[in-house]
Length: 221
Image (cartoon, rainbow, N blue to C red):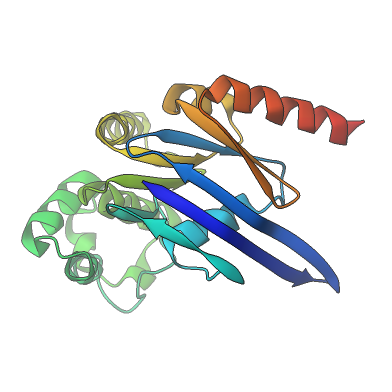
């Protein structure tokens, strides 16, 4: 279960105040897969970062019961001078999982082979994505945070990634940010729409999609 209590966040951007969260109160039930919808710039990624604990709100708090992932596939926290193996072991210690077991999983999943033992600064963007996705999938979480995950690699690797990802989603909850409504329909059972700092939660994802589409039409007009 994840509960947002009177959550507020405002940014200053080019001299303008941008409200991401305006006294949001919401609860995402344990095991639910929630689509987080909203226009570009509404603050979905910022809200996800506050839920992850990597961005502090101006006021209010996020209450988490159970383990919550960082945004799946995010590679920005890797230390560039450490190898893929060293980064993996460091993350394993942070999340208190078996470092040998996680390393074996990531090495096999990522298909990096000997490059797993080279510094991350030598990796291509695709290699970093494989490493990041592998680490994300190698640690079991009660709730996964998903921010526009895109598959990398050839068709065989994409198929493998999708299979592992769907297996994790079947056994855990998730909060999913995606502009693809097809992905949202496939992954999520409930939804929430972020609009002008206000979050509207719907137990049925189709109701959230309808709200989102209506909001986009109004803005288009």
